[in-house]
Amino acid sequence: MTAVPQATAAPDAARPRSSGEFTLTLSGADQTWTRAIRLDCPADEASTYHPMGASACADLDSVRGDMDKLKRVSELCRPEYGRLVATITGLYDGVYVEWSKAFRDECVLHKTTRSIFHF
Image 1 (cartoon, rainbow, N blue to C red):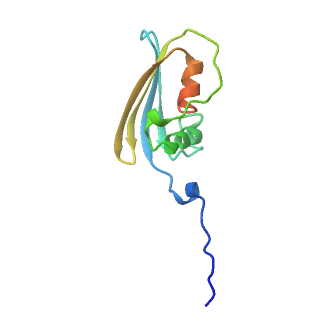
Image 2: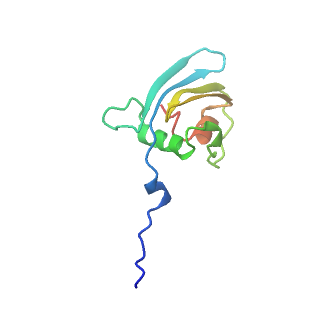
Image 3: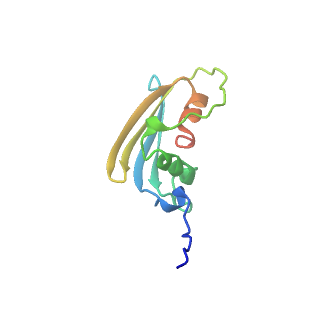
């Protein structure tokens, strides 16, 4: 008998992409302005509302929809004081997601949430 090695797939390639429907909101800390966008995952680049939909979905997928598990990009931000609040609500693989956090400025927001709030 001869053993035949089996091909193994990379862990990310084996895991199917998850589905999600989210509303993303950014607002000034004093509620002086608000903007919102819809994010559907997996993102279809031809019909997505989010300008970085595929990347945002990949970022959410990397933490299975748990925003608190996103690892902050380690680049430093110069202090820019324009406090804002980021909020995400929706369904990730059928599980309700609700997350909101205040940030010192847009740089810290983007370093913390990666591409999710780039709109």
